[in-house]
Length: 224
Image (tube, rainbow, N blue to C red; front, side, top):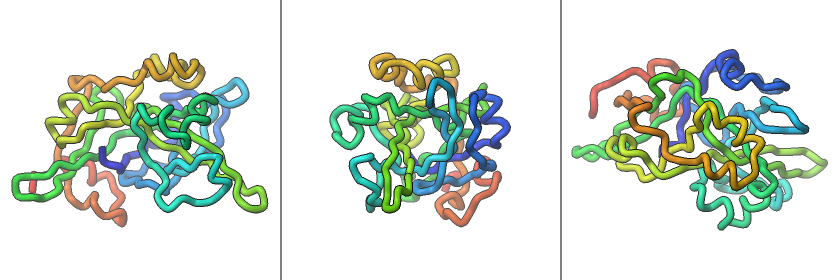
């Protein structure tokens, strides 16, 4: 799964998720990469909260140390297998990241890495399941980070890019269970999103450069 996302406008994300408390502030972006801050919805003190979390999971056990390669995406089987995730998972530190789409890459016959833009047919804004944690740096400086969860790829994803995993896209009706349910109830929601509900098309290789960030990155382009 490619680790580049497209963020919606803040007003559209708030219309989709209806958070009780709004602490986030962001604008639409078309080429978001790990280490940047992502908007996220989480359940805090009995209500939904809209916050900004740094993309790249750093566990509380790191005690504020910035890891060289914090994990931007996590396969769901790792939630209990890896000690770095286990405490956050069992504490129900789950979140939802609002997206307008994401990119994936396929290797062409000419050995080019061709980028594709993936979106949902009937949902301009959608939520992807994530896990977050809080670590405290020197002088009590708090750093909150997240990782986006991955599930097995659906048929469209695997045929388009050859990737074996895709983001854990949530159905709208499952948002509250993901945020508020037990770990067992939450993990039962994580399945490949239906291929017939998605769309993908090739886009310009300009997306390969983080210096590029404009809506035209998502427009259809010829395959290299």
